[in-house]
Length: 266
Image 1 (cartoon, rainbow, N blue to C red):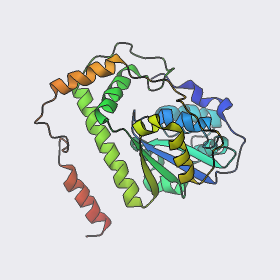
Image 2: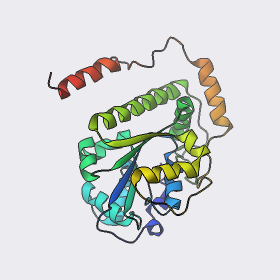
Image 3: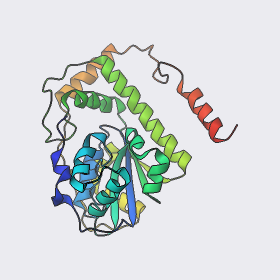
């Protein structure tokens, strides 16, 4: 995968602070629109620069820049350099990034009293198709160089991406609710249609003020005719007897039930 190089630039740093006074975590999944939202928030100069700082593919470069292989020290250095003048630091965390922290308990410890936005897309199939395309091309953000310019339609891959996206969204809802953290849910489509009012809502939720509200997206739309074609083909190919709510090994509900029983000590 060719990295999104611009993220590492010192041009995006803010004046160094000891630590942020407030933290915003965008709880996200692949291709849910978090890149668009993150860049829109960055343009306000009031939310730091929300990026996937815990993405395993980016860690080596961040470690090289800040001269440490210790994950907590690395996150501390990133917070010091990417916290905006009003004291707000923001980070995007996909659900599969949580193991980098050593579990969600450590996320809460590293970012105490953080506010969470659970960002999702209403049309989860379109998200899954976009995810399948990005997995093949290696292009997750406009401007990245593709590793494969000719992605091939694969119904099984789209089905897998659909399952994983649904599971990760549910996992985020479960984790945030069971942990008792302060969070709100927001839909990418609504944010895109009402960008300024959405950012005002986020600012109120975080407890900060925004002097400059963007009225248009700061990033380029990546979906095209290929996304439409793959979506159409998948709907034609999908076996309606498929049970999306079940994994290959066992049902999700019994697994969740057993986990709750362990938590409750039963």
